[in-house]
Image (cartoon, rainbow, N blue to C red; front, side, top):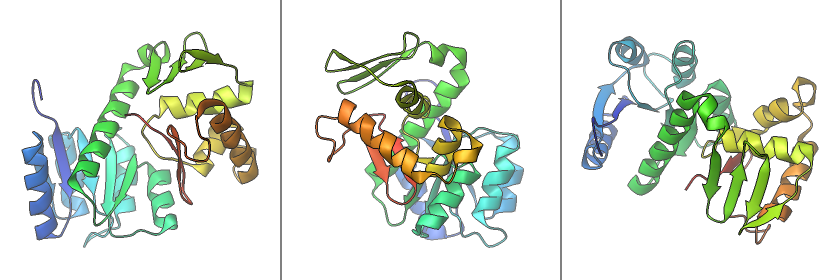
Length: 234
């Protein structure tokens, strides 16, 4: 890494897991700060603001969801939940509370590092503000020109309906991040439609037919089972 290495705040009460994460992140060039409790993390974060937070939901003093909500009152730091809780409702609750991603234990180091890189890129796009709005998003053979509102697949222009474009643009602005069904419905259709899951399924299927080589095996528009969707970022 060039310049100052990114600081990752690991909020985890299990000492063995902290050692594992410290070694893995350090070997990848990250600096690591550690907190065993939610209270310690919330006190440390404003003093030494991290670039990324890795958060276990099962903490001895408070639920990890409370930590997420507290951090989101003052910070947009990327939060990647790393938890043994693998139920869909736990993932949805964490993402709706403001987490950027969710990784279920046990996990591989390459996947963890990939999720961290995606979270950092998403944070950089948010920090860029209006600049990101005028840029092109490119992954594989998919190119989205946000300024011109034009989409290309393998250099061939694809035409979308206004609602299809709004759904794709929402995914592009949050590329790499898991977006819950509720979030997408509220952003694209509005608050009255947050329970209308069939709208989202139909329009996502339409996007896949237009953007994917094989809609049944999507390369770009991935399903997070029971949770939502993710537009790949790498």
